[in-house]
Image (cartoon, rainbow, N blue to C red):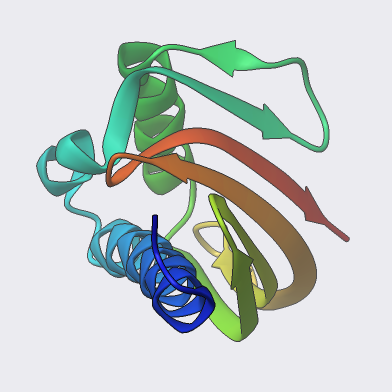
Length: 128
């Protein structure tokens, strides 16, 4: 059994590692490199965008990500504030988007990620 300090340090380290998984995932998303997203997503990942039903499974989530990147000339998620506790990582974020031939728009968003064994198992997104 760990003493209280070792236990607290272990939990803090796990939270930081989970935050880094999410930050690296978003960096690869911003780089539009879908192949690099694969290792970050659990095979049974669930994505819940604000405007539609859940998308289940790595393949379906990657298809959805590809559709987003194909639809927008600009799609950039910038984490403004990040907090993590255990397996949960939450972001307050700015999202920059631009459809072809349109002006760029800025959306504010919130997202939560559940991370287990260095892979995202759930991703919920809310923007407006």
